[in-house]
Amino acid sequence: MSRFFFKFFVSALFAVAALSASAQPAVQPTVDITKVPAAAQPSQQFDVGAATEAYMSLMPPAAVARSNAYFEGGYWLILWDFLYGAVICLLLLNLRWSARMRDAAVRVTRFRWLQPIPYAVLYTLAAAVLGFPLEYYENYVREHKYGMATQTFGPWMGDEFKSLLVSLVISSIAMVLLFAIVRKFPNTWWIWGAAASMGLMTILIAIGPVFLQPIFNTPKKLADPKITTPILRMAHANGIPTNDVWQIDASRQTTRMSANVSGFGNTMRITLNDNLIRRGSPEEIQAVMGHEMGHYVMNHIPKSLMFFLIVIVLSFAYFFWGIKWALSRWGERWQIHSISDPAVVPLVLLLVSILSFVSTPINNTFTRVQEKEADMFGLNASRQPDGFAQAAIHLGEYRKMRPGPIEEFLFYDHPSGYNRIHSAMVWKSQNLELFPQQPKQASQ
Image 1 (tube, rainbow, N blue to C red):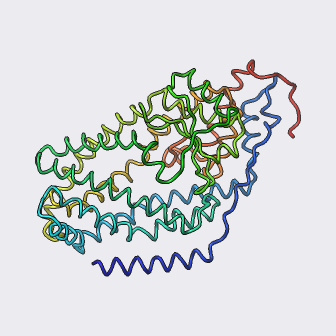
Image 2 (image 1 turned 180 degrees about the horizontal axis):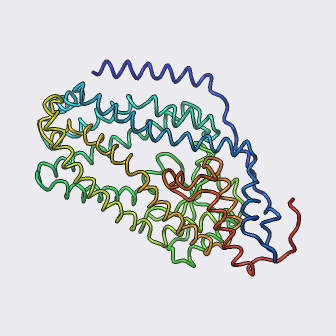
Image 3 (image 1 turned 45 degrees about the vertical axis):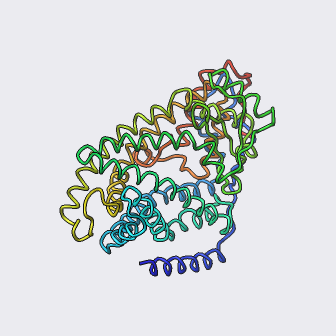
């Protein structure tokens, strides 16, 4: 088995080198927002529909076509990610590689509670090697093709290696804890396992901004008062306890613009990526940060944790039934002795992938509703509807702006760009007194 993995990995690296040598240079984004369209200027004749379409027309047809192709291709990747991951799990089970990794873990240590650690290391490495071709296409080749990536192959592989190390640590801890629970509570492990998984998720959210993010990017305090002063004023007005704004060097990896208010308690941080600082207007930055603060003020992290607690409990009940049924049919063939056997991990992950694939519209809807709430909070907090529309167009460089309703329900975890601009223009039409009035004029 180890020889197979080694040969597979070496072959994949040669294929990568060949593809990298012929890779096309990144296509830079074409949308540059500098002025508010004439139809979106405040006036007595302000029309929401016309203002929305004026902003939508700022995207050149070529940019719209590229954005649509990129985002619609992502629909197929959801399917291919699921099928590819399922094939890996089935290979590890049916070829009994998982059982052999379990046997190797037993040889490493006689302490049963420690055996999940060497198994976790072997499994994570095996999954990384087998999954590398799709990972390379999806996150390197495709991102460069559509102008989203800025890294050359070497630095990209460096980040991939960092991700692998983080996965090794987290998966080892999780497996030790969960298999200890399965052995301690053979009939009710699904309840205690759900609670433990929820605890691990909460810890990762808390430590992410301080301990995990710096592994991949360098955070530093933003010192430009033109940017920080309005952001901190908005934060203090909404009860966010911070006196610092952070930035990260995301441009070393991507052209995407983003920001977040992450963590909680002592680890809470307001963070902008340098693409947003470089490309966004002051109004756009304030609108984006108002949105992100909305997540914090409206307690979206605790609400998400409660939602996922319900999801995790139901998922573990499904695992309890599914694992028992599958082992009764194929356990002997797979050489998996019981549910407390680490070799069961590919089966668990196969069940996870099936459930995740089927529940994609539900999870997307939950997130999309929260994003809509944060949009409205951000508009009220920042009072920058035009900045909000500009942000929607910049995000439209890699998100289809005008999907159909079923398409948006199934695949969107944020409101579409059209709907976000329309909401901003509705807000503007209802608050025209906040903006200097001027006569309606021809488009510029």
